[in-house]
Length: 307
Image 1 (cartoon, rainbow, N blue to C red):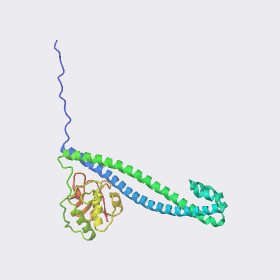
Image 2: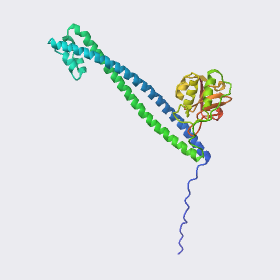
Image 3: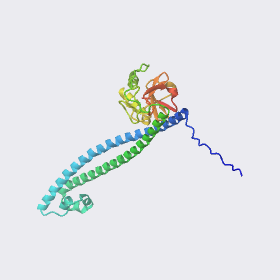
Image 4: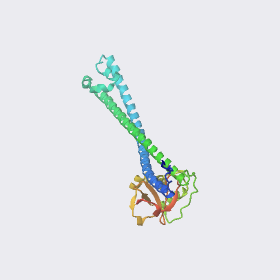
């Protein structure tokens, strides 16, 4: 009998993605990174604001603690006097107990004290209440900061993962994934004047510097870090994040763009600066440097704002 055996089939590897497919995937990844970086930047700003709040609360609490201690010592002196005069009911226990706060509910104490002590006791109680209130506010600020810090760490881990994926794709495309710092810089020669010209001169001086998320110079930048510092060089504060820069600027139609105007993309997740002649300067993505590109080459145009 002739046996009919199936011929072995060759294992076929999945076709490698083309350069165009890889580039398309990279573009999507960059767009996703922009949005996550914006959230990271906003959390960073929130954390800085909370740090200032905590520092201010510390100062206030320290002042309240000092006043409370002064009041406590004064009441302690009254207690010593009361002891000498055999008038020890309530007052000595009030300042000598482990928890003076518990005595605040003892309304009979104030009734017991002679009228010339009411003012001193009231001052002590007020100082204690303020001190405890400030302590509670400080603890709340600490708790808020701890939460923000935890969120920031999680967001940073998410960005780091996206950056690693971006670099892997860049290598597949044969591109360098870590441009060196110290770009050649450049000089703005366009039609801008006044503060806009100063801002653009600063931005042009950063040409060739590498993109790095969360960076605000001096040798690397992210998109909103570059625009913020550029306008800061002209004495104009436009805050740190793309969302807040949008809120801090006046709306401008695309047809009315002037050099120095901020241009926003992809749902406020990316920003650059218009330089004139249909071009912008910006810090694009991981693996790139500060560069001038045609506005028409930028996807997802959202709108423009004038500082």
